[in-house]
Amino acid sequence: MESTQSAVPRTRGSALTSLAGPLATALGLAAHVAGGGAALAVVIIVALAALLGLGAVLLERLAPPQLPGWAVLAASAVAQQLLHLAFSAFSTASAVPLPGHDHGAGSAPDVPSSAAAAPAAHSLHLMLYLHAAAALGAAAVVAQWSRVSAWVRARIRT
Image 1 (cartoon, rainbow, N blue to C red):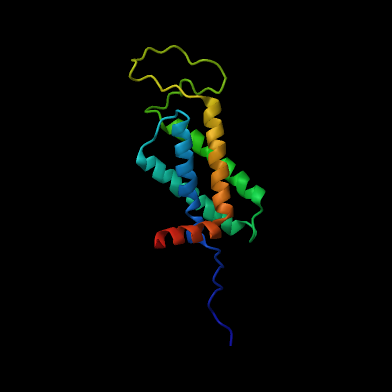
Image 2 (image 1 turned 60 degrees about the vertical axis):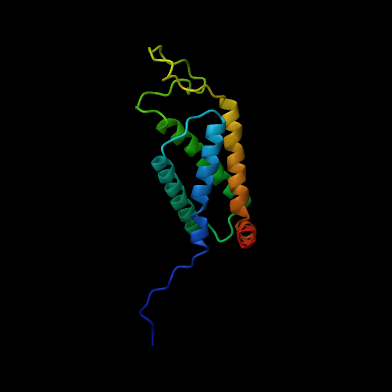
C-alpha cells in the first residue's frame, strides 16, 4: 500500500541559517558606522536583516549539501556590498543623490545647505576595509556554525 503523503523536504538547519542575515546586517552596520557612514532607522535595519536571512535560507535550499568556503565568502561579500549600497541609499531623507558618495565620479553640484545638514565626512577606503572585514567575519562564522553554536551554548550555561 502506497502512502499518499508527499515527501518532506530535508532541512539542514534553516533556523540557524536564517540567523546569517541578522549577523551580516549587524556586522555591516557596525562597519558602515565605524567607517563614518550614517546609521539608519531601526525599521530599515530589521527589514534588511530579514531579507538577508531569507536569502541565506534560499541559498541553503538551492546549494549543494556542503557549500565550499569560497562560495560562502563570495555570498558574504555580495551581501556586504548590497548592505553598503542600501545603507548609503537609505541614510538620506530624500531621493537626492548622495553628496560625497560618488566613488570618484565627480563632485556633486553646489547646493546651499546648512552646516547641520552637511553629511559627516567618511573615508571610502576605511569603509571598504571595514565592510571587507565584516564579510570575512560573517563568512567565518557561517562556515563554522556548529562550532560557534556549541561555543554560544557553553557561554549561556555559565
